[in-house]
Length: 150
Image (cartoon, rainbow, N blue to C red):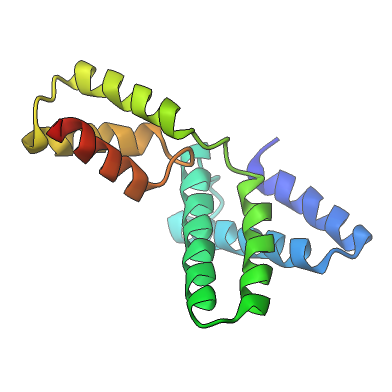
């Protein structure tokens, strides 16, 4: 089942369960998907990769909001964002652990033939594409920099 159809079903379930936080998060996802679909072109479906990018963007927005709310001592708003973040993350693939990420990047560096920091662009291009939704870009970048500097 495509993500869009799955979201519609989940919205119906959240309405039946009267789960306002989940419903709000799901409607936000549906809105972002529909907006991207209309921007792309009328009537065409989004690819799985495009849907993942949208979910990843929504996830990052929630994390940024949580950080800002916590800095401003607004725990009430931060908790609401955390609940919505949990819903969004439920549709993303399982995130890689630090060990898994390190192993993956070591293999990728060997495949690409990167030898130092000057080759970071080669590694980041493939890593970012292949790890969409599985790891944060900031985390990938920091780990690649660490591995190439060693």
